[in-house]
Length: 586
Image (tube, rainbow, N blue to C red; front, side, top):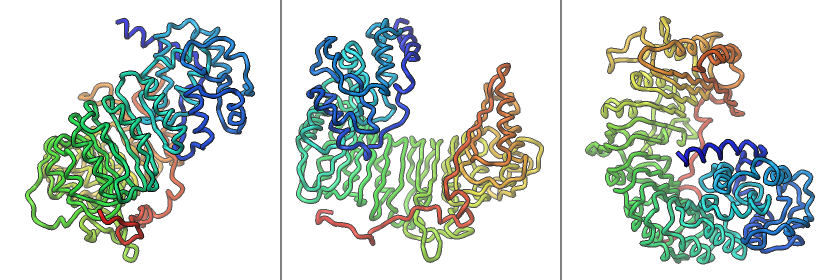
């Protein structure tokens, strides 16, 4: 009871903070200038005077605190804030200082103030330290706020390190992580080795390995010989559950420490692996049997996915983007993954599905990460074969449909961002019609035919869906009657009123569903948009429960070009034919 009341009070008091105090935008890592990077370190450690601060603070587009940080972590004294050489006219800390001195926030106990501070943190998994965002901004408002911020470990338990200058980054990372106390840590570190050692910053991070929970390593420029060690962390990661590895131009010898680290992590459950070269042998050395989530993206070569997945019998979520699989035409026994509930796969890899049985599958996303033959316009399918379709480069859902039928799974959410015809889309909806509650479509030209088939009213469907495998499908039953969310992130070429009629039919109360809310997203500029806005206002009046939500999406710049020739949407892949430095070990 006490905890609940405290949390609610902290949430209520957060309203007294100025709006600009809360994180609204994320600073991209690549846009963090060296000056701001240096300033962040100086603010964190408090190892500078106002003469050091001024040249940096007066630069344009820098949201800098009006009051210099403390030179130590002891309680601040009033005289520390008497002299400021920074123009504070537009500084956000002006209103913050008033809040902490004379506003309601000044009467808030330290425990609740700390909870308010937690609401001010960036939503990023790995936030980049910035003087204009919490927690650094919190420490520059007044002495009391600084004391509370520095003594609240939860404000310092997440960090992204862009390693550039050892003299700045190493002390900053050490102080930041020390302030996190005993809490589990989420740390990301980006290092461009350029064939130079960076062992000292890795030792700082590895010294806290007993508290690692989610770790991300982004390594660049590591050819032969081995250039680093993770020995401080090996066999010392009892809490590590998620690990992300993003490698570019890395030799096999420099991947070995990562493999050794993960193999000795008893609680590891999630691995995201991004690499230049597909290497089945190295991936097989991971503790695959313990994983519940696996994400693989590799630029070059081929990968034997079935051999890999055969060891992942506890897998619940998988994302496969690249590379292409080996020869899938070889006869194999179907591989059963009984716990897999979520599948995210590039559309030109779906031939893998012919060898899988996924009885627990509920969530499917098939997206356009494929390669299109430049000369013929035909889609290069899994295994290097050519996928024939109704038109050039069009995806055929045959493998997906056979997977659903073979596995007897109930698909609840379906996301299709792939070049396909409207008829193929209808086939996917027909196969999942009894269980589908969420649909997202991109890359398909939607017309009256599909919209009429989704209309839950006595309107004869205009779309003829082949139903040889499902004789029960009739011409009068609407597709997917349980749909609660439809996102049409694509062009809709429909007659006036057809889209509105579909939305109205979905708002009819259903006796078997309570608190039924229908959510529709469409591109801006549709001819029925104004009528849909009026429909939303009608169903969201103060006297009634809001059961219709409307989202308006901004069309991409090339939204109306290339829909008839789908391959223009795709991003070409670069395979082994491209120029690339190689390492003898790989």
